[in-house]
Length: 442
Image (tube, rainbow, N blue to C red):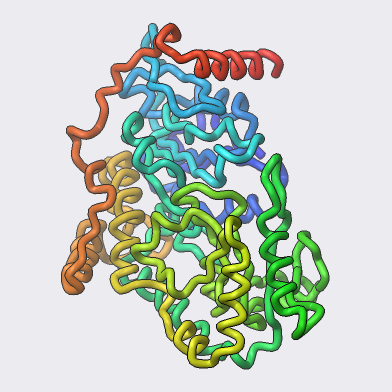
């Protein structure tokens, strides 16, 4: 699914999308969510969104043809990074063609370090695009690429996310979003829910990865075998045993999940900072989430006491905890009383993820006030919302500075690197040769 840009289109200041997953319906819906709130036709520059998982040479050919301002500014040469940590940027021997009126953003989606079919996106196309958004190595990638920002995937979910950048919520809207999760369990009392467990997924095992969902679901079913022979409902492709989600709830996952007490919602893979919409969907439905994934980087606003964690090294710990909650009303009441999020969550999310992304996007658009370009414009500015968020945290005795170093110009690299193949280790050389052979075959 490629929406290519012709040079004649570029000055029209519209929107183009270079997608992935071919004709996968879910991802088409997510693509629509990327631009449904902005009047892109009014932007100073053409907006070009790239999403991961495509064959790299398709994306590469498009981004070579439609050179970003980032490439032109730093005179960067393209490189293929695959199956190995990032190399430094190479410089072009000849000047780049002057291409005006295009600003590009890469929209990362999955754990490319784990999935064999995603290796080609592990550098987030950071040396091609103006703004690279991903969910991995937030401390390592910016050391080479100042246009990279760590953004959890749940902020871009079409079901429960805030659509950072593309939706640009105000601080008040983030606060409303956070409050909605706390309300879900009150509106649908946990003890009155007819179903026990639910797992909504299309798959379990990808590539060489072991099946974590199967392991958790089997453990859950064994734990409650004395209670029911159908402890877990599977309304999607993975182990489907009911069609109620489609037939009665018209694929509204949140509404359907409010019938259940627990949601088994592990990530597809593990990497620090790789947090998708899965755990957020459990919270939005008021379920107790049973989770496995790299959420440790986000536990300064997620409340770990409101989550049940699965540890593959000690699976029986989860079974023991489930039995404790089921058999001890006092422990259950205490668990259910825990909020989903810690104090200051809305302000922290705004300052850590929403403001930095929007600020850079605004800078690329001649410092326009992005709130004025929403289809439903807001009478505010990024700086005004930032100040509100800082004041909200200060009132709690907190501050948000996790990625503050990226705001300092002196910490941004000069981009004067050249790659010296002879300085590579033997392992790096073998990986590079593997990459070259891969592309020669294609």
